[in-house]
Length: 499
Image (cartoon, rainbow, N blue to C red; front, side, top):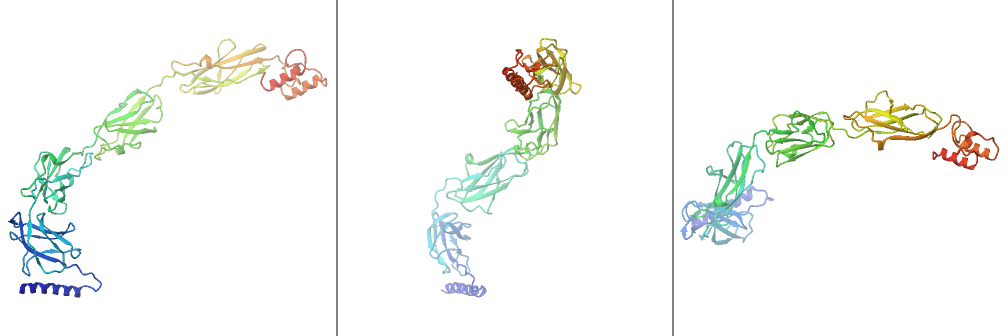
């Protein structure tokens, strides 16, 4: 009884001190509920080192480790006890565990209660199920970290996790570390860092052991594992296409480079993979480790190009190529099979028996080499370049025919390019002009004789018809020997370029 009074006196003193020490507005912590008593597991005294815990609403709220077999805490005023405390409502049910196995006894929480003697009996469930374990894999890409760190979780349905171990390839098992500092619950996070590894491929295995008696260890078939690669070596470039120094490369070619290992696609761009000043797009094939530069348009023929890969290009581990990589190739000459096109000025009628014609000859690939003309079925005669020389893709030309007879004629014009072999304008595409050479001084329809057929000649012809003016040679526009309304119509058609 005296011991009990001492125990009652101590809390009262503590409460009094707390009330004096804290401000009136501060909240008073919930007083603990102390427990002690015997503890048996499977009918036997719990061994020394047994962890007895208390939980309310699945939250641990007290723990004590046995120092005497079959006994947790003591009845003495100064004996250690299992103190249940926390944010717990009065009357909440307290559950008790020994090494993770639940006891048959429960108790209603009472803050500040006298020490309660509660004898615990635990009937452990027969635990034959090993823990399960998972591992957080490294990135599927190689890593340059030669001492990678792994994490994961080990869980059990009946007994606390007692330990987690890892193994690299077929090496020895090594103890991992509990994320919270101790393996003492049904679910435990773990972490471990592998000692320095050389470049190459590895597999790490993880297993867990529970606290059951006898303990269970994760079955080998269920080991968590992760395969990964250590990579600190810079990638190399091989098989550039077109090959370095290659000539006669097609102008519609694409440029490629193959790497020694898988590359980080995001680092292969139009900034890190270039072809002189050529605009284009870049792609990467993971299966063949090949980067491709596709020009937006055909390259220029007979031209030297330089392709370049900068050190911004890296493998998936982040290793850059050791140095900028460049190579040259030369495009070939594209065969020219397209003939030039040509135009010619238009003459309707002229009194000039040696008329002059002009026009333009053009080609898409080779310079214009010459322009020729012929009149009717005559021989081909060379025209003259407007700028003095035929030596560009577009050339103006001029020529003056020899003396032509009075009447209708057709002039034909063709051009030849400087390709090898050269191409000449196809006969179907000749430039042509059909015109009439009139007698000098008499132009049909030129009723007023000013050398031009226009609306004034219509007025002149009408005045001749009504006999207000004398007849003129040009007024007989249709050449039928009579000046009448038909000649007015003819002159109007000439003005409108219909005749």
